Image (cartoon, rainbow, N blue to C red; front, side):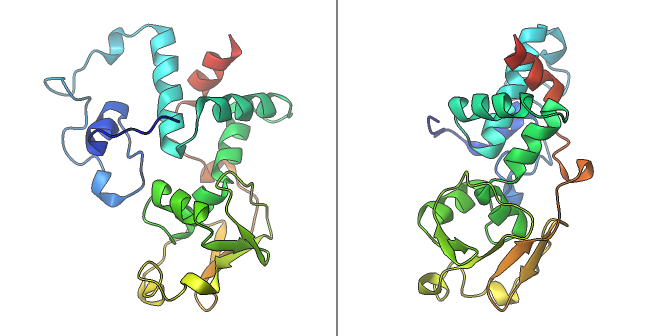
Length: 202
């Protein structure tokens, strides 16, 4: 995916959602697209295709994935019996970089992805540097010994963790475990998956 280099908060306003996870990008003020003079924007005038495209772009940016990856997630989801949009979200939430973010070991998904890329974690005792790796129920992950004393992780034992309910944190090992399957209520509600599915189903 081409890297966005503009103001991140501006991009969050455009999509109407905190795309990066870091609290500083929460939409507290001006919760409407940049360039609009107030909350009554032109979104209501968009065509159905434009709405589908916007929601697809929002999902891509939210999880930091490429168009090819998105298409692959869609194709994989259509082969399962579950609702396609629900399956896509479960697959995206199960990405290793997202799990690290949801566990509270990173401040944002981009940071979590960088940590994974640099080989800072292992899964079930094996070093894992693939952000898209699909974590399953029962999988255990932890920070590798060589970086436990770094500035990134040195004070984790003092951090107040609020992990996702499907993840259990182990502060002694500086890691955690996926303790159950993802359920409907665990999934991201800010993205209209029906529009994403409609976009790819054409």
